[in-house]
Image (cartoon, rainbow, N blue to C red):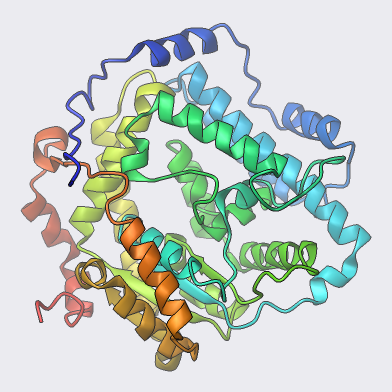
Length: 421
C-alpha cells in the first residue's frame, strides 16, 4: 500500500507540538559556550587525551565558533546542537590521533579502487550508495561509525548493534524522530544507514557539511578559498584506521563511498583516489533545490527563532549552482574508463541495472549472489519512508520554470543525461 504524501503546511510559521515546545523551553534554561577552549577542554576530559596533532584545525574551529556564536537568530536548542557536533568532532580527533600515534603502520594501508558516488544532494546519491552497500563484497560506512570512528577509552567495540557507539546513534535517531517526525521521509538517519565519508573530515574541522548544520556563509567562503586536498587526505587516512580496527574480521576491504561535495572537488578526489571509479548522478536542479530548502526550513523550526525562507532559497540556489559549475568545468578530469553519468529518473526506474553498469566500469563482476543482495535491498527500501510533497512557488515564492532557466549551462553540458530516451 503506497504511503500518503506528506505536505508540511506550517513550514514558514511552525505549529510546534508538545515535545518540540518542551525541548525549546528546556534549552532556554541552559548556558551554551560556543567557545574553542571550552570544547577542547571537555573533549580532553572525556577522553583523557591531549594530543591534537597538527594545530591548523584550531583556526577552523575558531571560525565556526565565532560565526555561530555571533548568529543572534539561533535558538538555544540550535546552539546546543552545534556545540555538540563540534564536541563530537573534537573528541574523535583526539581518539584518532592517539591511534595514529600508537600504530603508525595504519598509514601504510592502501585504500584501493574505491567506488565513489558524486552528485547533487537529493539526487539519488544516498539510495545508490546504500544499494551498493548491500553487496557484501564492498565495505561501507554506517552512520554510527562515521559519527564515532574510534570508541571511547574503556569501551568494547563490537562493531554491531551492541556497540556503545551504535546505541548512542540509535538513541539520537529516536530523539530526532520525536523532535522532527517528518525527517525520516526526507533523509533517514538510523544507525545502520550508510553515510557520507565527509563526516570523517569533521575531526579535522573540514567539509561543506557545516553549511547544512547552520547558515554559515563565512565558513563557505573559507572552504572555497582553500585547496581541499589535505582534508581529503585526512579522510582517506581515517578510512585506513577503520580498516585497521577490523583487520582480523572478514569485512570487505574495497570501499563504496559517496558525497555531493565531490562534485566541486573532482580534481582533488582523483588526486587522492586516483584509481577510483566515480558514478555521478544527475537530476533537475530545481527538484534538488526544492527538496533541500524544504528539509532545511523544516529543521529551522527548532534551530532558529524564525524560519528564514528567503535566505534559505537564495543560499542554496547559489550553492547548487556552484556545485554544478564546478562539475561542468572539471568533469573531464575523471577518465572515461573510470566514470559513469547516472540519470536520476532512469536510476529510480531500474536501480540494479545502473549498479551493474557501475560495476562494469569498476571491473567488479555482477555475480548471482551480489545481484540477489541488490534486488532484496531495492525491494525492501522502495519508498519505505514515505514521500514529501513540495511547493516551491507557494512556499518560497519562486517559479520552478523561472528558476530552471538559471541552470541552462548544466542542461547544455549533459544533454544525453536529460534526454527522454
